[in-house]
Amino acid sequence: MSDRILAPRHPGFAFVVLFTLLYLVQYGAYQWVPDLVLADVVYRHGIVAGAVSVIEWIAPGERVVVDGHRLASPRAVLEIVRGCDGSGVLFLLVAAILALRAGPRHTVLGLCGALLLVYALNQLRVIGLYFVAAYRGDWFTPLHGYLVPTLFVVVSALYFAWWAARIRR
Amino acid sequence: MVGGADPAVSHPLQAAAIRLAAAWALLSVAGLVAGAPLFRVALPWLEPICAALLPGFAASLRVVERTPDTIIVLSLQALDAFRLGAHVVVQPLERLEASTTLLHNLVPPVLLFTTLAALPARGWRERLLLFALGFPALVVVLALTTPIHLAGLVETSFQDAAGRLDLARPTPWALRWMLFLEGGGRWLLPLLAALGCRGIAQRLRPAARTTGGTPLGKG
Image (cartoon, rainbow over all chains, first blue to last red; front, top):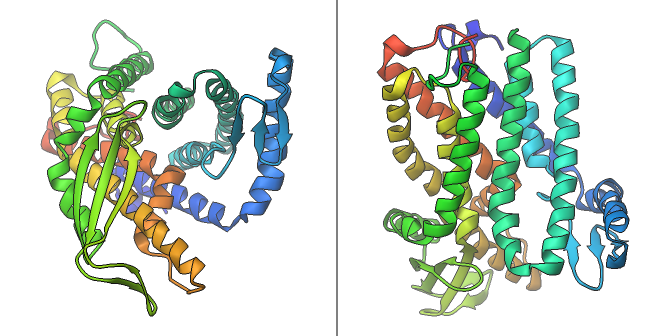
């Protein structure tokens, strides 16, 4: 696809179309990954284990353990399922970065940064939500379902804008 | 890049970041404080969509304020027997309910207007136009999210019933769309809507149209 083919006078339109298609491709591919693979491999080792290690380090008294794709302690159990892995935001960022069609170096750096950012933010989110579930359960829904998701998208948008601005210099 | 609309801040990225953060904070607080009365305004056009998604049921929507979570409740009454195969799973006039938390459904509106605030605009008139376009966009975004989410929850219960009866039932599109929304679609839609609003605003004010680049601004 090129701007000439899609919209020679409207490169913004080309960006939006490409962005949407790239998001949908990623989402579609994600649906093909079996739940068991996500739960037993990706979530257990990639998300839960790391989060438990951090919680044990900052609050050893929590006695939180890895229970498959769950963080479990006497105070709370947090289950990691599809949608709790940061994939939605990652797909948005990857789609936006690729749709901008920067040079290969900038694109690779942007994608690597996106992956690190989303992973770090998601781990922070999981760890934070564990403590919320354990100590302030009444805050869980506002944070988990409202404030944190929107903040996640906002921070990712800021990263994209920063990365895009660096290309233009 | 095109300079931002805020004269006090020279760097467009800084200006966009400030608008983004401020809009997110203000809209998030607005949702927490006044989300229920604001959302009630949308119920009259969301209710018919729910009814259309679930033929054979009379549908009504209401916002129920309770502790700890205010919820949106879809109440259904079967107009006729609802069958799965040869089995009647819902009797005529039987009532069903599905609910979702209000805050969950405020995510798309918050993202829509936060994005509109962050997008570059040439002057306050275009900024005002962007926000004005946000309201019809909000109608579309809400129509594509809340009713389908609720219908998807109802369909989930029907799928579960079919499973218990060992019946093969194709996954309804409302359920697929609900899963898409939960997987990130409810973030994608308001972003696309905001970009669409910017495109329309630029067409309505051709003197302010950028000559290249991306929705971020001039290339």
